[in-house]
Image 1 (tube, one colour):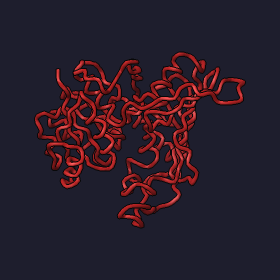
Image 2: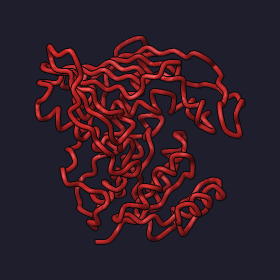
Image 3: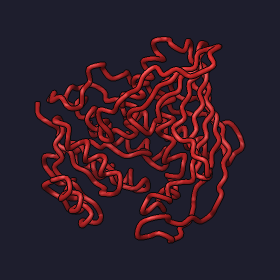
Image 4: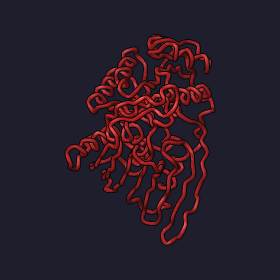
Length: 365
């Protein structure tokens, strides 16, 4: 066996985190980066020491690229992923998997027919923070898990993102952009979702860029920017969630799992590390159970998928899991419109925890 060849399409902000991690993993080799703006691809190639750069074809036509990491904007995820599959390569996509269930199903079916794999963010669920929390719950420290509460509230990303308009278009907003982190963490604990209900609102029809060269530029808001949702899982357990870009008060990263004996506060699901705290029944204070440190960042899921391909086993951050998360979010949007509970037709297996000795920096291939 040998290291797995990687190509990247999309040279935007998030590519820095992926490239920094993937370049440090001995089981991966980043051969090429492409973008609709070849100059942007060249800048990333120069920064990270990548040999080939140019348009998307620089990646699709590279003979040594086995997995293409798709970091395009949400509206282009499926189009690019289908081109990757047509080139005979596996694809890892940033979230969400697609904008619609139909496109997501088409993507997975195309990959299955071709004997290729689809992986999808978030991979934060593979970090020591959420992995450790999952083991604590499985061990029975909170008793039988019953309910969950998640909160993602803040003023929105336009204050820091240099080009945030796409984050307010279809396929983004607080639900589709940030929801996958929280929903994937909940599915890891409770299993697949059976039904949802939601209410939504939009504070402003237009917003403006707060920093960078486009500061002051206004853009349209196409999606709901505050969503309050409830979910019932196939297991019978339930969760309440807020996803909001309308709040001056930030409460991001809240994931609390309540069991028969205690409540567990998980780390921010948008991170790979963090504290895990427990509030036991009849206790008056929180107790820190663990403080975890990230071994790696974005791109961890690409590495786990690459190793799985070489080992001939399923990868954990799968397209099927991403499609289920997409289905859940789509049902929440439909519930806002219909004013009713919506059944979630899809399902997904819960990935097994990573082995205790899993190390991204050990050469295994």
